[in-house]
Length: 456
Image (tube, rainbow, N blue to C red):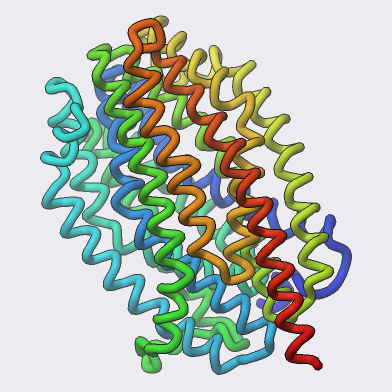
């Protein structure tokens, strides 16, 4: 097991970061394939209304689960700090606190998602002809939410320890099963969106069980013992202090996307909803590739912060920014140029919907590297243990700006267009990154001074 771990405290940074990040990118892409397979299968066999039904649940689903998935970020940072400072008991207690917190969080989300799916979708102005299928998909999806949350917590622990390869292996297995079950449930059992939702939760259950077993089989401080499972107050408090702001940030980020989705729905166009949803799913592959560098920054900087290697932290930040920019420009441009062809996998019955999707990808995918830079800065701050500051900056810079944009500029008749909505993304990314960059330098300088004073 240890041979799979990347040493984040020593060795060359560029090659180490690339080696560490590539499995995260591939893992993230596989996770997105769960939803992409849903959209492709229903698009091929059930039509654009079913595509709209599945895709319209995305912003709302993310809004509900992000708060708790943020806690998994807190668990990962706590493990990274403990490993960096060589405090095995802290790592042990964090792991055995994280697992029961994941289980409790997952059960709570199941109750909320299953019980309130329909009224929440109505609040989003989901069209009446799409609502029944959207509600059905969302309720089945949330029935298996415990597996989703458990996987995120366990994967966060493994990545904090330098292991990004095992989560990739397990998601590959689950992804293949998901695609097979998608086709079987829809084509053989005629289950429509219910079939793809059921296939998704089965595959997520498999990946969650496998990643949990990987922690059980470890031989270091991250090893999980079922009989020692216990919620330790000190570790829970630190996990919440770091993870809760991350979760709130993710939820607030999703609120702005829910409002944007509602604004898209308000046009009353089924083709616009389908095109927007399919394009959003394609964009997700670019975004998750960029967000992998956020996770790298969190864990690399987290371990080095625990070891008080601040000079190395500056180099880690620079390498991550350079990598995410290069990947963002390459993938974002490629996604836009191939959009007319890729969208045909999702939408087979509407050329107009495809054109709507292409338009969205021009405004969002091409400048996506700016979002990646913003996420790396956020991850760097969290790795240093400063989670509240990036939350505030993101809420104001991303969520606040987008919401203000919708209720001001978007309301002007000549700017009441989908293109105007999409433009708010780029503006919010750039402004937020610039503020986070200033904060990162200030927080790092403060850490360096504290270490110097303690040494004196």
